[in-house]
Image 1 (cartoon, rainbow, N blue to C red):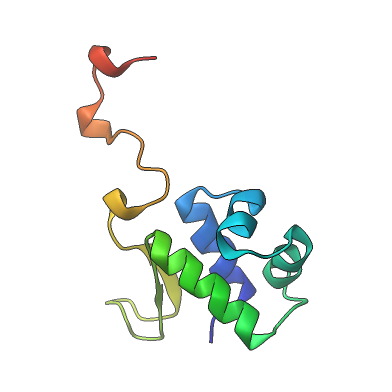
Image 2 (cartoon, rainbow, N blue to C red):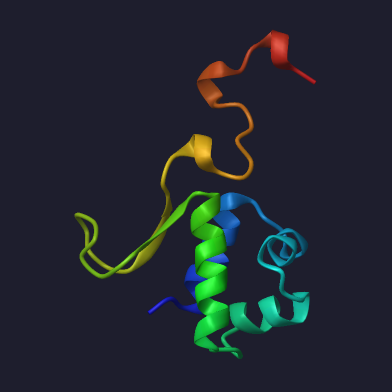
Length: 97
């Protein structure tokens, strides 16, 4: 079962603000804030947020889905994340702002 902590972690990994996730999921900021604080547990809303975050590049891990085990969240691939940015190995004077 996905938890409020999973959703907060997934949104943080993607660098999404509350406003950005509400736009992507078609929900109000109040609903997202209630879900992320654990006050809202509607399965349809949880599923919608999970699907939205997975489309942006996170994977939700079940217990024992990794070597260490335990539930969690991780980025599937950096290039699929919402905010790709510049990878550290590609930083140079040519792309300084």
